[in-house]
Image (tube, rainbow, N blue to C red; front, side, top):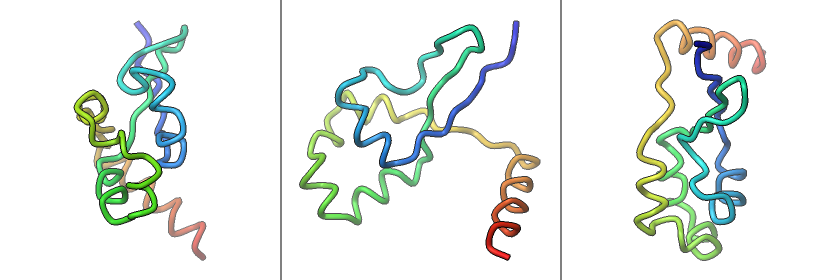
Length: 91
């Protein structure tokens, strides 16, 4: 069995798609076992932004909160690789 192909969905894509494609996250699809995830900071971003809260008031409904309850888990090696890429981009 091939490993799951994890795809990180940014907050903009999540807010635009989650209402029309349900469930959006944590569902494998395709031959490569694609699965969409969000980072746990998405909720913090939403809570801090009154414009997001007004535009996407459904975000705190139970169905969507439960769908976001499984976050992308990143290994130490992946975190290190991400930091290196981030540092490279900023230089």
